Length: 123
Image (tube, helix red, strand yellow):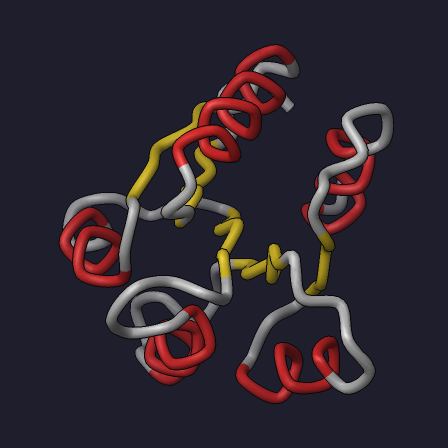
């Protein structure tokens, strides 16, 4: 997965450090934003293959940001994976209804994380 650009939208510093470390260790090129506004600004000049989207962001949440990204011609093709600590009944369906292509729960399983992402990106 060498050099594949990934945007991590996560407001928790500890989670961000862990995710960036896991991505870098597998050869991904991680970029980060701590809220929707930062993510939208980054996406003006950057087109990642995949976005790991925290759903509980301050301000605009990850559901609304995903809806905006999936409705815009320039970002609709980006794979968006919901990343959330909320794993209640119906949460995965809510994320998919917003346009997420996949759903991962926190805490992240560090042993399978990279393989899971590779599965979303395909060959």
